[in-house]
Length: 161
Image 1 (cartoon, rainbow, N blue to C red):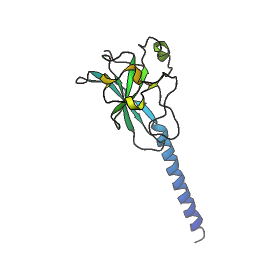
Image 2: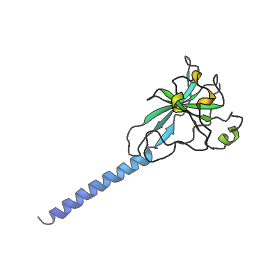
Image 3: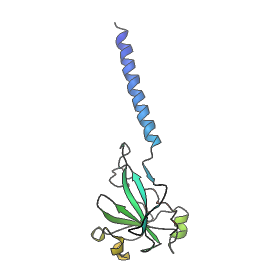
Image 4: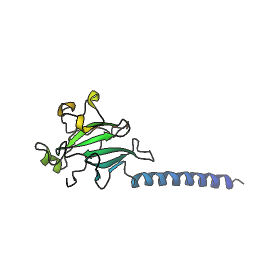
């Protein structure tokens, strides 16, 4: 009977370790954040959009989503960030078309301008340049995260508008 107890204990330990390793491998396979592969066109709104999928916590099993919007009728110089939870546009990033930042964006540099809290709306058509803060070469953290991991650079590929 004595040899059974240590063997059972080793079995439980091995099983727990296997579960931990499988969980760690699953987290490695799934990125913390990623962008959709293609731009989709919204004919009614006359804009293109691409999903930004993210996990607020590295241990989360499901992704949340925000939307990157490109609306050439408003500006070819920016992509805008829309939060479906608040139903408001909250930030913008210059595109490769931007006269000041375009070359650097093409090289992978990340610039952001955050919309002032009281100027956030559900329509890009209502927003003005003054509604946004100073352009900074600094990404905000992943939405709702607590570990300060930054949002990956938005995609530089743009749809043929």
